[in-house]
Image 1: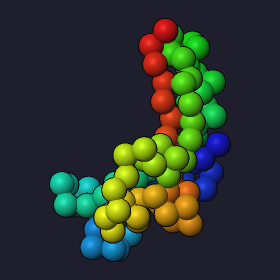
Image 2 (image 1 turned 180 degrees about the vertical axis):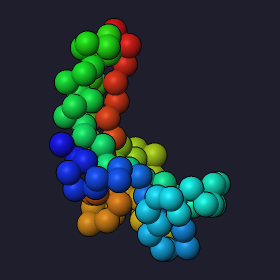
Image 3 (image 1 turned 135 degrees about the vertical axis):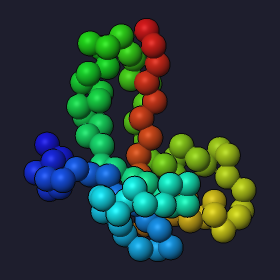
Length: 95
């Protein structure tokens, strides 16, 4: 259960390197990054019930590796100690 850690929800924004929880997270649409905690185990468990197949769950780094160039943005997104290791990608498909 994720909500016990964040009783007001897990949505948060990052605007100019500043963390903005709700309701401030809604103030800069299109100019900030939004993120939320996701319970991937629940999503995977619900897949069959909703006619989905779990293809894979992997780190952002592993997902992006085949597509990376040597730019600073790519290095940031694929850093195993940063975003690349912190964020996950779940691919599901219709059965």
